[in-house]
Amino acid sequence: MDKYFTVDIAGMKRDLLRCSLNDKLDIAAFIIFGDVELTIHAAKELIARLPEFDYIITPEAKSIPLAYEMSRQSGKKYLVARKKAKIYMKDPVMVNVKSITTQGVQTLILDSIEGEQIRGKRVVVVDDVISTGESLKAVEELVAKFDGNIVARAAVLAEGSSYDRDDITVLGYLPLLEK
Image (cartoon, rainbow, N blue to C red; front, top):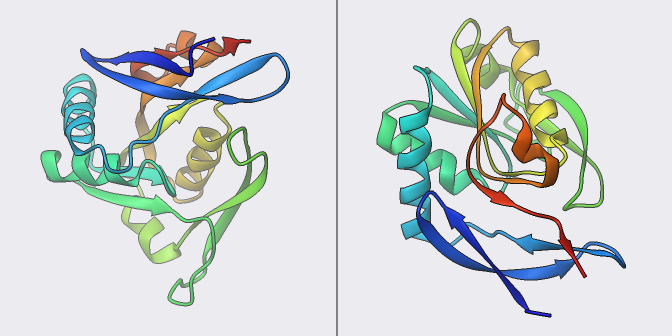
């Protein structure tokens, strides 16, 4: 069995390390950290496919470089749904999410000061990979708590059956890999 899986991301290819999910399946590990060329490419391609928006919001952590680059290219602000409350947060709002990659329940938090910025605004939810959709759902819950208007959901890759969702803009497919 090959140690890597080659993925096409809107015309840019990357070899991803196969990682064991369980006895029958592997996933291909997509790590955007440090891949500046891909981050710039993915941001440009996603922005071109999205409707007008005012803000970008992303869960912490791997998708932060993508959100930053989308912000830089579009001139729109981005917010990060944090994993832990910070001392500077005023009245943080929290939701719980079960993630396939962290293999447990984690919390996503948005500071009320930041949350008020998206009230009534057009918001794009961005992630690196959509797998089960649970992180996406948690970020959507945070946006809803501040009456933000989600106009799009976007990711670099969609894994498994998430690729078939018509409510997410993605640049490539990441299959679950049988052993």
